[in-house]
Image 1: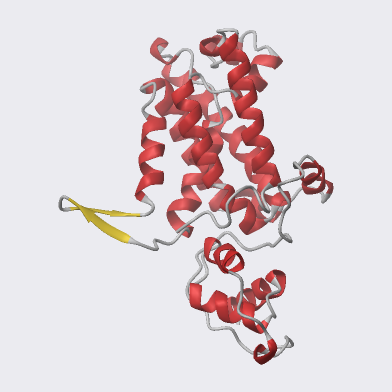
Image 2: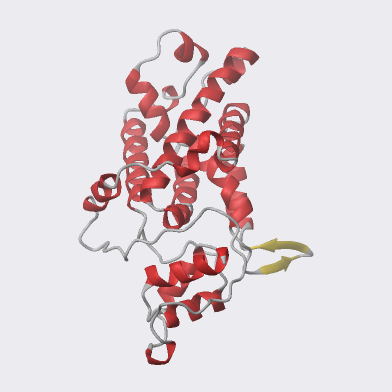
Amino acid sequence: MNGGPSGFNNAPVTRAFVIASAIFTIFFGIQRRSSKLGLSHEDMFKKLHLWKFIMSIFAFSSTPELMFGLYLLYYFRVFERQIGSNKYSVFIAFSLIVSLLLEALALALLKDTSLNPLVSGPYGLIFSSFVPFFFDIPVSTRFSVFGFHFSDKSFIYLAGLQLLFSSWKRSILPGICGILAGSLYRLNVLHIRRIKFPGFIASFFSRLSFPTTRSLPATRNVLGNMPSYTPRQGNYPSAASSAEPPEDSISTLVSMGFDRNSARHALVQARNDLNAATNILLESQYS
């Protein structure tokens, strides 16, 4: 299990979100206003200021939360690579909006003063991402430490638990709401997984890239379980004349959930064309 190639290749929306979270957290931290960004019952139902609503989505309440949060957001860029930037933008919007609505409902029903204010930051997006992470990202290695069994996914879960319990009930509630939002997305409520933003969304965020962050050709996949595939023959170039696939291309397909051996054969068959190799694997899935 890995996040694919290092950096933000094929993940311009994630890159923009990570940078925005870091900048807003640092800015309000310098002004010592981070603790005041979290939404409360009064904010939700009486005098919600638009700036506070927006900032509560991006800015974390503390530096430790920022570190764990950015680490998780960076890892979860794998989902943008799987479904494409335009669909991933819908996933972000859906996760944040639904989780905030669930938080408002919970505050209204519980009326617990110890929840005011809730922690700030993209908890809805982060914990919504744990749903496809649990179901769709395969384990690639397992190991034991002092008799306890772990996998390479364990580090992501540990970072998530650290973030979830960072402020006890004030952080647990947004985390649970995020998981519920991710579950609704996975259940394809209102056919949300078919929706995607116009193509200019990805183009806009791609233009914000730095000169040294050149992206690979964009690929798309479906957000679902990825078993091992045997590429079938089709109208693709012969494998005999193809060079050995580059490791980063294999890693990209593996990060989408495809079997490594199948990914290599698909790249050979497609003459190392990442888009064509993805199509071969997808055709094998639905054949």
